[in-house]
Every structure is written in structure tokens, then in C-alpha cells.
Amino acid sequence: MPRKLEADLTIDELRRRAEARLRIRRAAPKLPHDPSEAAPEPSGAAPARPRADADTRRLLHELQVHQVELELQNAELSRARAEAEANAEKFSNLYDFAPVGYFTFAEQGRILGVNLTGAALLEVERGQLLNRRFQLWVAPEFRSDINDFLERAFCSGTRQTCEVKLIRKGEIQLPVQIEGYRVTDSIAEPQCRAVVVDLTKRQRAEEAIRKLNEELEARVALRTAEISALLEEAWQTQERLRRLSHLVLRAQEEERKRISRELHDQVAQTLIGIKLELMTLAREPLPKPGTLKTRIARTQRLVEDSVNTLHRFARELRPALLDDLGLIPALRAYMKDFSKRTGVRAHLAAFTPGRIRRLNSAKRTMLYRVTLAALTNVAQHASASRADVRIHECSKGLRLEIEDNGQGFRVKGELGAGRHKHLGLLGMKERAEMVGCTFSLKSIPGQGTTIRVEVPLQKVHEGGHHYANS
Image (tube, rainbow, N blue to C red):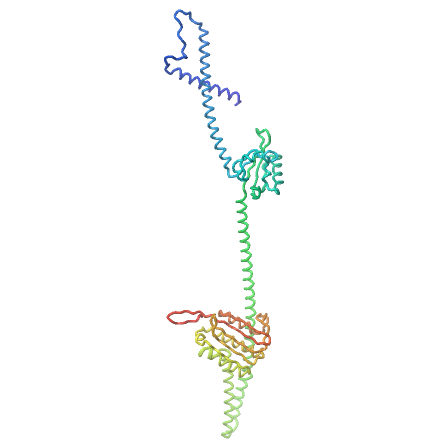
């Protein structure tokens, strides 16, 4: 609808409302001396002209209508003014106390308007900011950025953004993001309305996230390294077990060969000698009593040698003393025979026989086998004249030590599986660790070797009894 026609309708409506209110007033009871009522004409005067009276009444009516229209317009204007003031106050509060800073810039960055939040960002009173260049509060290294932002905003007419740091109180730098666009409608000069957002919280959150990511990456890297180390250790353990199994198989085969050879060379030969002697006695005439006794005694010695050889095999395979009488008697018997066979003086000292008796079968067997393997190494490789075996108490439980005065060797690398043709040191270490014990080796060239095995024991007191950990 055209503006003029809309205005005419408004005027017509206003006139109709004014005339309606005037009719209401006329219908109201008249006061005694109503000045609007005309004075009565003198009885002797001549009657006025009807036309003049009608013009007067019409003029009075128009004046009254205009008066009511003015009253209505004044009331409408008052209502509109009150509503506008309320809206202005509401939007002023929204503008001033917004969570972001609002700035209005001229082309060179001159501040034409700013809300209270924007002034608080710069920590300057709003009155001191107006008509001053915004670049004064921008850190020097970012002033070219704000100039480029203003140039883009005024030239392109599209929304532009940039990030700069503001100077507060001459030294504190506040990171902010500025987003603005050009405004030209109903404004004498082009302006840029911009929103300034404090990035401190966002940057703190980003920094916290970055630190968390770095910490997480560090933990992942550490965990990955730990897993890699575990995998490498597992691979090495698997490789060591594979080599150990090969060594075990080879040692078993060598042991079978040795037993077979000794059975053939000693037991079999002795039995053949006994058989030949008995065959000779059976074929020949009965000899003289003295000769017969001598030949029977020789045959008995052959039988005794065979029995002793079989007993020695049995002790090496699994001595009955270990199961029947315990570790200490089994070691004493073996070391006595070891000294006779090798010429190496072997001495045993056990200071805790009570605790040794409380060891379980697996640990007793381990201590026995490690001692045998160590003494075998002494006899074969150490060139020693003496070997001392000690079992005593230590802070962790029991400790077995086998020390010799032999030639010694360099320890580094000696526990690698690839360095031994037989079980040797690796076999001792594996036997000890298999039952939860600790194996260590100390050797100096020319000063002998010491092997230690520590057996952990756990004390449990129940009803006055002391039990060893199995």
C-alpha cells in the first residue's frame, strides 16, 4: 500500500476517533455556565443570519475535532515514547553487558562506539576510548594484522576475521579474535561494526588439551616401549628356551652315550669276565681248595665292581639318599665320591639343616643338580685343587655357594645360550629360575669362580610352627 494512502487512512481513522469522542462529550450533562454554549439573544434584537450561524457552528466543530485529534496524538506519542525508551534501555543493557566486546570503527580504526565489555577488555573507561585509534591498544607485532583486517572489511564489504593481542596497562597481552563487517545504510560515512572475543579461556583449554595429548602420547610411547621390551624379552626368552631345549636334548643324548659306553666298558666287560671265569670253573676239573678260593674271590671282586658301577649310575641319575635322607647326606656322599674320582678336595658346610629339611622336593632337587653341575665344571674346566660348598642363611632365605680356586674366566656373555655346548652355566641358571630362585655368578681370571643360588623362604607362624615357602 502506498505511503500516502496509508497516511490518509491513519488521518481518517484519527478523525473518526476524534468525532466519536466529541459526541461523547456533547452527550454528557452540561454545566450551569458552559462557556461553549452561546449567550441568549436580546428579545428586542434582530435574528442573525442563518448562514453565519452555520459557519460559526461548523468552525467550532472543526476546532473541537482538531483539539481531540491533538489530544489523541499526544497520548499516542507519549505511549510510543515510553515504549521506545523501554526498548532502548533493554537493548542498551544487552549491548553494554554482552559477553563480547562490540566496537564501531571508522576507516582508519578510529573508535566511534564501544560497549562496556569492550572497554573492560582494554581496561580503559569508555569515554577515553571514543575517537581514538584502536591500534593504540594492539601489540606492535600485530598492528599490521589489524590494519589489513580494517582494509579488507571496508573494501570487500564481507565479514572478515583476525586474531591479535591487545596491550592492557602497558604490558599484559590479551589474545582476542576480531570479526567485523562494513555498514553503510543510513550512515553518513562507512563504518565497521566488529565483535571482539577474549581467547584466553579458549587458548587455556587448547593448551590443556595439548598437554593432555602430549601426556597421552608420552604414555602411549612409554607403553609401546614397554610392550616392545616385553615382546623382545619374550622373544629372547623363547629363543633361549629353544636353545636350551636343544642343549637338553643334546645333553640327554650325550648322557645316553656316556652311560652306554660306561656300561659297555665297565659293567659289560666285568660281567663277561665273570662269565668266562665261571665257564672255566665249569670245564676244568675241580682245582685245589686254595686255588678255588682265590678264583672265587676274584670273581666276587668283579661282581662288587659291577655293583658299585651300577650304584654310581643310580646316584648320578637320581640318588636314593636325596629322597630317603635329604639333601645334605646326598651331597656328602656325592662329594666324597667326587674327591676320589677327580682328586679335587671338596668340602661341604651346611649351617641351616633345619631350614633345608623344610624345603620342598623341587628346590632340594634344584640345589643338588646345581651343585653337581658346578662341581663337574670345576673338574673339567677350572683346573682347581679345592671346591667349597656352603649352604647358609641370608636376608632372603637360604643361599647356596660353590667356590673354587681355579683359573676363573670373564663373566660377560658367559650366560648366553650360544656359548655352551652343554647345559653348563645356562642350565644352572634355568634350573634355579624355574623354581623361583635367583642365580648369580662371580668369576675373575686367575682368582677362581663363585656360584650363588638364593632360595626365598616365607615365614608363616601358625600355632608356633614355622613353614618354608614351597
